Amino acid sequence: MPTDTGALDEDPFRVELVDEDIPTPRRYQVVFDEARIDPDVQKVVRRLVRHGFQAYLVGGCVRDLLLDRRPKDFDVATSARPEEVRELFRNSRIIGRRFRLVHVLFQGGKVIEVATFRRNPKEDSDDGSELLIRSDNAFGVAHEDALRRDFRINALFYDVEARQILDWVGGMEDVRRQVVHTIGDPETRFREDPIRILRALKFAGRLGFAITPDVYDAVVYCRDALALAARPRLSEEILRLLRGGQARRTIYLAWETGVLDVLLPEVSALLYDDRGDDGPGQRLWRVLDYVDRRTAADRPLDDTVLWTLLLLEPMKEACDGVRDRAAAVADFLEPLIDRLAISRRYADGMRRIVAVLPRLAGGRAGRFARTDIFQPALDVLAAELTARGESTEAIDRLRSAPHPRRQHADAAQFRR
Image (cartoon, rainbow, N blue to C red; front, side):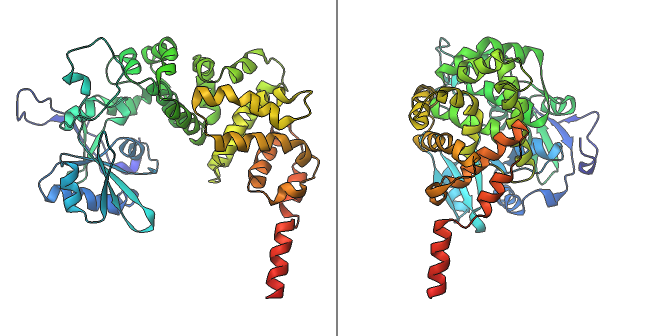
């Protein structure tokens, strides 16, 4: 826990019941450094409260503040309905069809998302035969919104005015223990939404937290349910595993639990078969180390590069002994596109990059240097050479060489 947030109550107090049916949260007095809380999000919360609504910071931003991490974004949950939020903020718009949210817009492209409290829609259903949630569009109250979230560390609410954390689910204890646990029975929660399996791995990897034994067992037991998830969501969550700064640890957890067998059997088979110190599996782990170093240096890699690096070793195997490398990669990717809805843009980039890698490694770029995929291809080559322990001088020469497009632009400038 960060020292600059102030002491937490060792014996947290309970608020009085307003209604016998409404559970009360544990309240923890916490003082965050306000410089780490976006001033615009504070304005949004305070204006909602001033007009008689409940409004809190929620989710990952609260968790990150407790861990002394800088939140990437801030979300607000409120008792106000979308139309009421829209009336309070002229610089806002309502988005979404099934469940409407409000985006409050600020200068510089900043967007603060404001969501009305929701409840688990399963509570409205008399039929408990199907656990999979296909719609999540029921408004609720604050404690219902906390209970319908996935993990306890993501269900903490922060009251900006009172400087208190409201905890209905035991999330503060999980933050203290540094563990990932679902709200309620893990198997039930994973069956409701299999994407939560990937989110469990993501939080364990990114935060360095342990997965509790019952949640770990449920991940292993429910992993086949990922086949029921929406394919674009699977694709996006895999990218989030790679972008989070702990790609190596997270992909290892996916492999260890068998999740990778379901999503990317081409990669997991390569890891199972690899036993050499310099085999393709070991190279993949070193490539993922490289990805994490780039992320830590605040130079995140393009999504096409991330997909290429994750699949590079099996794609290279698919190209062995084949003259048309681009066609071989296209054939290899076709079942993955179907299984994970990988966009054709990413697939086309991967095909072009893998096809040209041998030429680039030899220091020959030619006309390829004029394409939009040239720099991403150099990033892939840099990762591969680093994983092999080889010099990256060829890449430095290619980056600094005057390419035809640059020469043409320089000549045009001279004529002007």
